[in-house]
Length: 190
View (cartoon, one colour):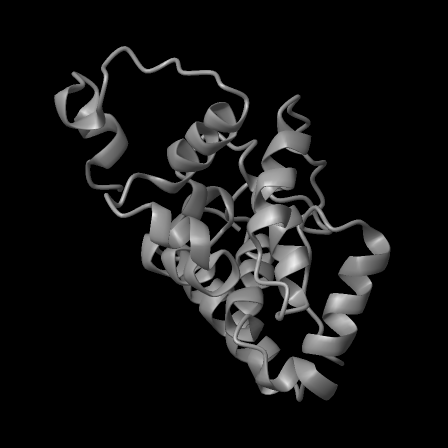
């Protein structure tokens, strides 16, 4: 399936997923609709996530069984893109995730895996908009979401957080407001 025909497919798949009754605590989980969007986006061929969303086969099967039991959909079989900074990104996200929300640990792995893509993070996740990504970040990583007060593009923001944890400062300007690349970090996303 190619081109714009994929967007209606994604919406239809998301509706199928959300129509299946979740089990236990998954029904009230604020991540349920976000997870449905991620799974549907992957199924429609959006983003860079592998078939298991970066969770591994066991956790991926558990996610589907608890959140979308009985739902059947095609999965795009592509390998994960391996990046050397995955562990650092994952550690940042895992340290910052909302521990009261069990699915936030999954989101840590999913987001770290999607950072390997070459598009904006919301696109690499297979989401339909940056607003969905901002919601995902607010729900799962409230401290990081609050820290991104300037609305920096999420992937740039996460990499900047990883670098600052390591004491690495590669930005040429002393602050974002005076940087020549300001529009690249804070400009609109297409």
